[in-house]
Structure formats: C-alpha cells, structure tokens
Amino acid sequence: MDLGQLARLRTPAGSAALKAATEVAGGDPLAAATALRSAGFPADLAAAALTQAELRRRAVGKFGPVAADMFFTRAGLEQATRQVVARRRAERVRASGVRALADLGCGIGADALAAARAGIRVYGVEADPLTAATAAANAEATGLAERFTVTQGDATAFDLNQVDGVFCDPARRASGRRIFDPNAYSPPWDFVLSLAERVPRTVVKVAPGLDHALIPPGAEAEWVSVNGDLVEAALWCGEFATVTRRATVLREEPPTDPAGQVGPATKAHELTSSRVAEAPVGPVRRYVYDPDPAVVRAHLVAELAGALDATLADPTIAYLYADTPTPTPFARCLEITDVLPFSLKRLRALLRERRVGRVEIRKRGSALEPEQLRRDLRLTGDQPASLVLTRVDGAPTVLICRPATS
Image (cartoon, rainbow, N blue to C red; front, side, top):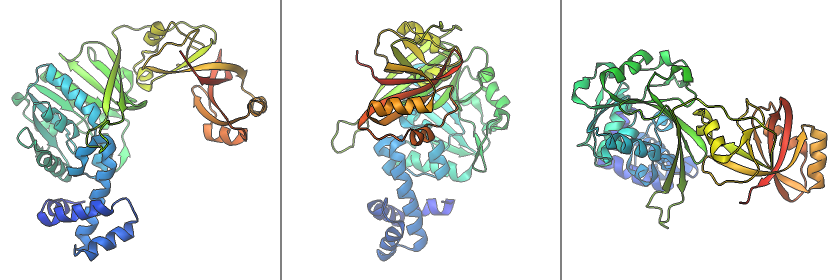
C-alpha cells in the first residue's frame, strides 16, 4: 500500500471495495480478485482492498473486533502492540495523572489509540509518511481523532513542553530486518534515555531480549506475556517506576458473546521485586514447574521459587521442583513419573512400554531439537506424555511427566 492507495480506500468507492473484499477474503486469492473486478472495481483498487481485508482479518488477534474498521500496513501490523497490552499500559499511564502524552514513533497508532480511549490527549509523531497517514486514518476510523493527532516528522524535534508524559517505541527494524543494537534504533538510544530526564513520566517499549545491563538506573523493567507468549518489554522511568523488575502475565479467556462482538476477557497477574535474589538448589522432586517466559526474562525465578517452596535442580536452568503442586498463574506444573539420564534407546523403549503415542516436548538447557526427537522416538501408542529435556547437575536428563492435579 502507498499513500495514494490509502487515500482511495478512504473514499466511498474504496469503502465499497473494502466491504466487497471482506466478503471474499481468506479464500482463493485469484477467485477473490476476479469477484471484485467482476463487481466493477478497478484492478488496482481491488488489489488494495483485498490486501487490506486480509490484513484486517489477521489483525483481529491483536486488536479484536475494532480491526474491521482500521487500516494497516504489513510492517505496522507486525510491530503493533497487542490491544490487551496497550490498554493495560494506557490505564497505568492514566492512573499516574498523565493527561497529555507524546507518542514518539507511534506506528499505526496501537498504543496511542488505547491511551486516547483512556481519556488521554495524545500527540503522535511518526517518521514514515505512509505509517503516519495510516495512524491518522485509524484515529478517524475509531472516532478518536479529537484526542489523537499525528505529525509526520522527526521524533527528536517534538516540543515536549506541551505534554506531561511520554511513550516512546523506537523503530527496531531497518529494511525489514530486526535491529539488535539499541544504538541503531530510531530515534537513537541516547535520545531515548534522555527522555526521562526531560519528562519525569516516561515509558519506553523495548525488545523482550533487551540486555539487563542497558536498563537505566532507577527504571522499572517490565516483561509482558500473553497466553504464555512473551510479547514485549517496557522501561517505566522516573515517577512511573515503583519496583525494579516486573513480570506481567496476561491470560485471555474466550469471549462470552456468541456473535464475537465482545473481545476476550483478560486476567492479569504480576510478580515484582526490587532486590536481587537467588533460588536455592536441590534435588529433582515430585513436581516440576516451567515458569512463564516473562518471569524468566524478568529474573524473578527466585521470587517464584519462594512462593512455591521450590528449588532449582541446576542453578543455570529455570525449572523449579517441589514436593506438592501449588496453583500459580506464573508457571505450568507437571507431575514427574520418571527421571532418566538422556538415552534415546532407553527413552524409546520406555515410551513404547507405556504405549505413549503423543508427546509434548519442553526443553531448557538441551541442544536436542524437539521435532527431530519426536521423529526419532517413532511413537506408536495411544497414550499421552510430556517430556522435559533439561540438565541436572550438568548431566543431560529427561523427565517423563503428566499433568499435575492438586
């Protein structure tokens, strides 16, 4: 999509093409294109509408039903914050007293729209002309244009005197490739770090794999997972910071509305700490816990171990072991039935003896590839099992498990 195509999609003819494209999207692309051309839409408008309809269909997972009215670019959708994460962040920003927020690097507007819905006046700045225009289109399409305006330009030139809060999502891609060096971000990392000195309430979205050594002194680092997937991290600076590290675990439940017009309900769980702790090390016990990736990346495994009365079997691997199962949103719990030094021959024989034909494979500290192991096991039975590939006292080990019952 280019600026001209976006403009055409926002005309009455474009709206009609989008409506028609929505009805045929998701099937055979050639048949869909033929259907739109047969309905009298020009080939270029039909192609743009079909692309947009497909992006909207994909966007439902991030944005829910509102995606049906929004506009997307492929890169913008991929990099956009999930609605459930953006909404929770906006609520925290609003609760801190922020009334005017600069969104520097606003992308297609995911975070800005959430903040505007929370009642915050948002000034978006985006360097890329098409992305900026897409964000502006989304502000209008969602009825939030009075609270969210977009300027196409350099984020470093924005006048921060007109806001009392800043959200910055520096671009971490160039030419379609992921950037791992923060100094190559746009805007650059030194500018990002200076924001907290200029605006006491600043939050920065960063990659989940951010090196802990890059966390500014006094900032709160938060890692967020959704339904078990680590999706992002953020640095809460200045007056926003309340702890040193936070793991936020979000669980979405299916919508109760049969028509699907109401998005999924979300349960949020937080684990925090402002100190550095180490989990005790002990033997393998009856139950193994696989901590949520947000807990692991936040270096909060020791805090979780304390809550579960659990220990590590290897100080370098984040599996926790306990004698009793304790319900927790921060980890998956499995009951261990067998502990074996890893041997493909022995493992295959034991699973065949147990008539195991389906395995879930989890791993930490193991070089084995789960799918290759699954093929090598040559399973033929009708029973399920979970395999945990790990190390115990440095030795490759496999745990045979089943779901824990409390």
